[in-house]
Image 1 (cartoon, each protein chain N blue to C red):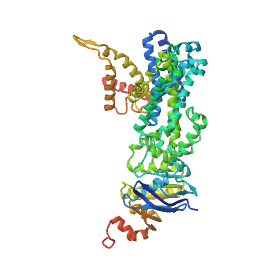
Image 2 (image 1 turned 30 degrees about the vertical axis):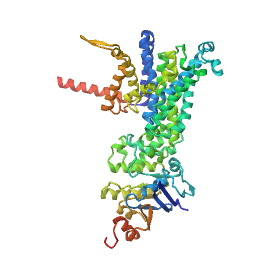
Image 3 (image 1 turned 45 degrees about the horizontal axis):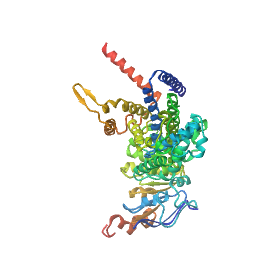
Image 4 (image 1 turned 60 degrees about the horizontal axis):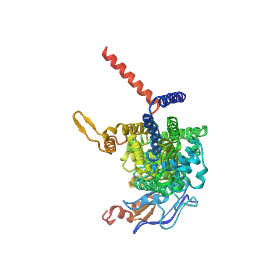
Length: 257
Length: 355
C-alpha cells in the first residue's frame, strides 16, 4: 500500500495551468526529490498536498483516505508535515515556543483546564516541554531556546522549521527547498541531517530542491517538472542524462550543452 | 524565584490594592472616583481587545457593539419593573423584559453572555476575512448594533435611551472586574491555547499547516474578548446611569484602540498603564478646550482640541515607538526584582567610586 497517492491532479489559476496532470505514488520509507526550474509548479504541488490549494481536477489520497479539499489543519492531523521555501517561523515567539506549537495537535487539555492550570494540563505541558527540548537537542538548538526565532541565523532557522514539522509527528514530511541559501558545506551537513532524521523517525520524505547535488546525493527517485508538466521520472543517473531535463535546465539543445 | 513566592507577592499586591480601593472609595471626591472607575473599565476593555487584536492578530473594531449589548442587557436587568414601565414612554417594553429583575452580578454575567453569543454568531462568518477587511466588517457590525438599538424602542427605548439606571458601579466592581479579566486572559495567553493564538498572529498559514484549527481559535478568542467587552458595557451603564445608542458610536471603539496601541500590542501591562494615562490625560487636558492664559497671552478654547492633542500623541508613539509604550514587555515579579537588584548594584558601584 502506498502512503501517498496523487492521482493526476491539475491546478488551474484562472487561465493559467500551474500544474498539469501530476501523478505520484510514494511508498513508506522512500526519499523522493522533485526538481525543476523556477515557476515549474513544484511548490504548487506541495500546496495541494497540504491543503492550502484544492486541485481543480482529480484527487489526492493519503493512506487510502481522500484528503482532497481538506483543511490544512486536518491534513496535518492525518500525518503530513511540511516546511516552506521562504521559511514561515513564528518570528516573535521563542525558539522553544516554535517547537512546542508543533505539538499542538497532540494536545488534549480543555480550555478551562488550560486557563486555570489544572494538574492534568500542567503535566501535559511538562511532557511537551521535555519532548520539545529533546527535539531541539537533535537540531542542536537547545542553547538558544529562549531566543526569538526571527533572530536566529538563516541555517538554524531552517533547522528549527524542520524541528517544528517533526513535532507534529508526521508520517510524510515535505521539505520545500531545505538547502535554499546555504553554502555547499552547510548543504552537505543538511543532507546528512535529512538522512539521519529519516532513519530516526522512520519518515517518508518528499523534497523540492533547486540544487541538483542535494537531490542527486540522497534521493533514490527523482521527478522533474517544467511548466507544470512532469517531464521525467527515474533514478539520479537517468535524470542526469535525460535530454528533456537538460533542455529544461539549460534552455538549449542538448548537443550544445 | 520559586512559584510559591510569586503567589505570595501577588496576594500581597492584591491586598495593597484592596486597601487603596478602600481609601479611594472613602476619601476621593466623585469626580476623581469617576476617572478611576473609567480607567478600570478601560482596562477591562483594552485587555479584552488586546486578546483578539494584540495576541491573536485579528483586527477587530467591534468592541463598541459588544459594549452596547452588555450595557442594554445590564440596564434592562437591574432596573425595577415599575420603573421600566415609567420610562418607556414611546412604546411599552416587550414582555420578558418587563418582569425581569436580577442582582447586579447576574446582570453583568448575562451582559457578557449575550455579547459572547453575538460574537459567536458574527465571528463564524466574519473571521474568515483578514486584516483591514475584518476591521471594516466588525466596525460595520458595531454600527449595526447601534442602529438596531436606535430602532427597537420596545426594548431599548430608542434614541431616548434608558435613564435612571441605579449606580451600582463603584471602584470595587470596576477594579474587581478588571483584575478578573486580567487573570483569565493572562491565564489563557500563558497556556497552550494562547500559544496557538500567537502562532496565528505570527503566521496564519504556518499555524494551520501545523494543525491549529484557525476557525476554532479565532472564534474562541473573539468570543472571550466580546464577553469581557459586554461585562465592561454593563459596568459602564451602571456608572453613567444613562445609556443611549449615541454612547456606542465607533468613537468608543477607537478610544479602546488608542489604549491598546499606546500600551503595546500583546502587552497586558502596557494596556493597564495606557488605560490610566488615557483617562487621566482626557481629563487633565480639559483646560485646553476651556481656554487658558500663558502669561499675558490668552489662548482661546477650541472645542475638540483634546482629541487633536491625543491624535498627535498617538502619532508620536506610532512614529517613535512602533510597538507601543511597553512593546510586548510584560510585568513579572522576577523582572521587578531583577530591576531592583540592578538599581542597588548601580548605587553600590557609584558609592564605591565616590569614596
